[in-house]
Every structure is written in C-alpha cells, then in structure tokens.
Length: 139
Image 1: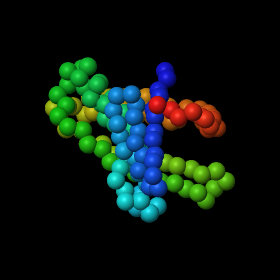
Image 2: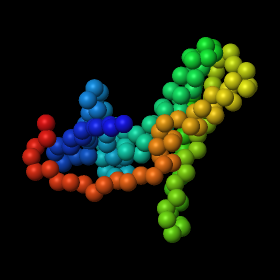
Image 3: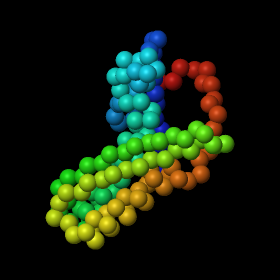
Image 4: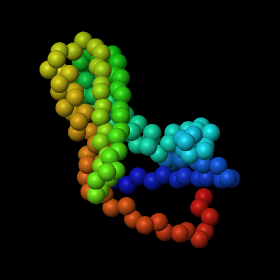
C-alpha cells in the first residue's frame, strides 16, 4: 500500500496545509513553540490517527455483526521518557462504548481495536529515509 501526502508552508509562520489528494488539513505548532496554534500539531495528528483507527475498527466490527452501537468516546495520553539510553514513548487509551452490547461483545470490540491497522503499523519496523531535495517546484 502506498500513501502520498503533500504539505505546503509559506511565509514566516509554522501553519502548514496538508493535502492527501482529497481533503485538506491545517497543521501548526503548539503555543509553547511561539505559534498561534491554529491547527493540529504533528503529535496531535499522530494520536488522532491511533484513536480514529481504533474507533473505526470498533464501529466496523459492530456493523458487521449488526450490534447496536450508539456512541464511542476515547481519550488518549502520550508520555515520553527521555531518561534512558533510548527515548521511550507510551500511549494509553481509555474508551467508552455505548449501546445495547453484552460484556463479551465489548471485549471482542476492544480486542479488535487493539489490532487496528495504525496500531500494527506503529509497532512494526520503520525505515524513514533521509529527505531528498527537489530542485523543481512541486505542483
């Protein structure tokens, strides 16, 4: 699977526009970095991706099984530990599932959510290549 995005930053501020071929999104740095904070930060976007993938997985499994799922709410928290030889990051998530569901159905939904695609990607092996400078203006 190949995914492509384009990001554009102009002027002297940090606000950047991201386009995935269909939808635009605005990213920014938090106020702590001196920015007005008018969009998602890179970390906000990463955590949102994890949360959305898990919620969408829960919704998909419930729909597939024709279970009455009304509402899903989740909270994520990321903690970074920089004290060791290598930085360690942990993400915890709490989820509330509302609907006419038995406890075993909820357990099945959570088990599926813990194996969502983004979760698997992030726990896999990553190779992030060095940036290549493009001499021509991209359109």
